[in-house]
Structures are given as structure tokens and as C-alpha cells.
Image 1 (cartoon, rainbow, N blue to C red):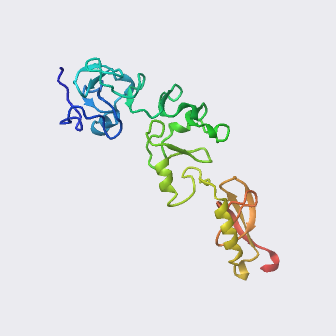
Image 2 (cartoon, rainbow, N blue to C red):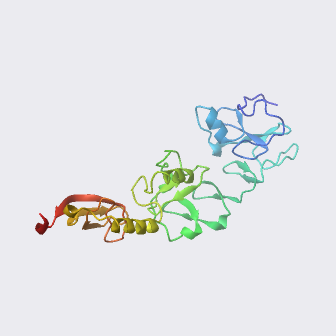
Amino acid sequence: MAALALEDGARGQARGRRGCEHYDRGCLLKAPCCDKLYSCRLCHDNNEDHLLDRFKVKEVQCINCEKIQCAQQTCEECSTLFGEYYCSMCHLFDKDKKQYHCENCGICRIGPKEDFFHCLKCNLCLTVNLQGKHKCIENVSRQNCPICLEDIHTSRIVARVLPCGHLLHRTCYEEMLKEGYRCPLCMRSALDMTSYWRHLDDEVAQTPMPSEYQNMTVDILCRDCNGKSTVQFHILGMKCNICASYNTVQSGGCRISVDQQ
């Protein structure tokens, strides 16, 4: 058996121990870039100063008999199953999660396949319930997440599609909602705010402005519909006359009617 440098996780790893924190598999990948053995590309990338190209992997080592062999689903020496799922293009070994290889994405996705479609303009796989019902942004998945600045397209974290069409990692989206409700890129509302706008309607109605402000108007720009309107100034928020959103910003100076000056 050829002597190869092992990853930190594999060094001292008991024979027969399957996979790592990322994947359940019965083999180690031989990295073509450095000839080291790692459980997966993520383990490799976390420990090296370079990235492992999954598509260039040619060989694997069985965790049971330790034979190094061509990448395949079953060990040619001891018949160990390297993965319930195996992709010969991505060299992905894992337990069955209904994965499928998307030719357009160029990588494997977690399915089942029939629950997803590939949007050619957005260039990513989306759930079928979004077909014809989402805003397309060309190659949106090739952009990094605006929250963590990490890759979205190849991430193992599910992406959240916002109403504006931008993408966030689901975990980043959940963290964002603890602080606010707007897309960090375009500032549109990232979820349905209808019930909250109604609550604001009640708050505004129950909070009259002082007499010197009651006839004051202001020009606003709505971040949700991009419409412009002139509305009565209120300290709690200014409601768009077009879409009824309070996600607005002042775009002009305040004015008071002549009879109030």
C-alpha cells in the first residue's frame, strides 16, 4: 500500500469508522492536488491552504481494507459500500438523501428531483412551487450571500429565495429576521409584512401628531414597489399610497399647507 499523508481527522482514525461531520461514507478521497487522504473536500479545504477540485478526484481509499483504487461506489477488494449515493461526476459519496446531479448547476443537489426545477436565468434549482412565481435575477446563485459573504451555489446550507429574487443562506436569513425585515441588498421587505402594516395603521391612528405637524406632508419613496407619493408626515411611519407598505424613505422635504403657516 502506498504511503500517503492523512488528514487530521483520518490520522489515528479507527479502521471502519465511516465518514466525517459532513458526509457518511466508507472511503477517503485521495486529493489530486496534494496526494493526501481526506474524508471529503470540506475537510480538506478546512485543513489546507488550497481547495480540492471534486471533479478531478480519481482515487479513493477503502476505510476497511485500506486499498487505494479508482473512485467507484463499492470497494473492489472487500465489497464495502462507499456510499448509498454515489455521483461519478462530483465524486460525492453519502447516505441516501434523494440526491440528484443537476447538469445545469454542475453539482449534486438534495432532492427528490421531481420536487425541483432548474431556472435557466437564475441558474439554480428551485422548488416546483416557485416555478413561474419568483422574480428572476440572472445568475443570482453565483453571488455570495450578502450576510456571511460565503458562496451560495455550492453551499451545503439551503438557500432562501426572497420576494425580490435575492438569495440568502437559510441560517443567515433566520439571523437577519432577529434584527430586521429588509433584504440587505435592495432593502425590499424580505417577508409578508401585511399583518404588521395593519398593526402600524392602528398605532398611527391612536397616536395623533401635535397640531403644528397635522397638516405637514412629505414626499416618500417606497422600497417595496418603488413608487413615489406624497403623504402626511407621522413619526411612527409613512405609508405608501400605492401598495400600503410602511417600508418607505423620505425623498423630499416636509411641507405645511399655507393656511397652517
